Image 1 (tube, helix red, strand yellow):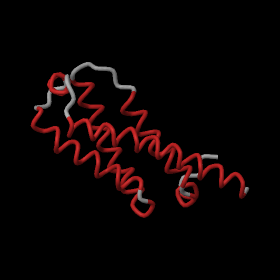
Image 2 (cartoon, one colour):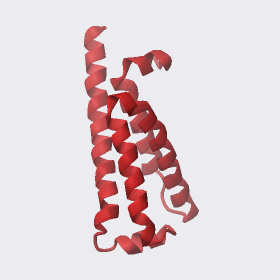
Image 3 (cartoon, helix red, strand yellow):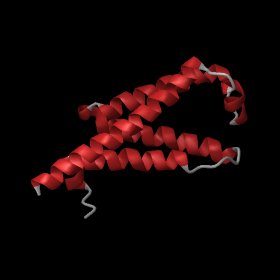
Image 4 (spheres, one colour):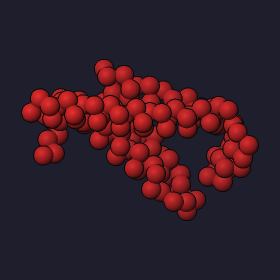
Length: 124
């Protein structure tokens, strides 16, 4: 069981850090605003002036998620953030596979890396 726990923990860390890397890049794009960014954000119905605030929120939720003591709070906040992103994309009739999938990955990564969460939510 110990080796299983170690494998779970490392798998969870890997998933969590891959997710965090993706979200940190996503947040940074809201600060950097590469070419085409303003058209993209306008397409989903947001003013470019809101991008910095959205980026700060995304960055803060992700930081909370990667810190072990605040990871559950971070996952809860990321769930809300990604739910809003999903709703935004549904509203403009875009594809909505990525945002819910990121939420599932967030919770799976946390479940794998935190034995306390596995005890609360035993999936096996």
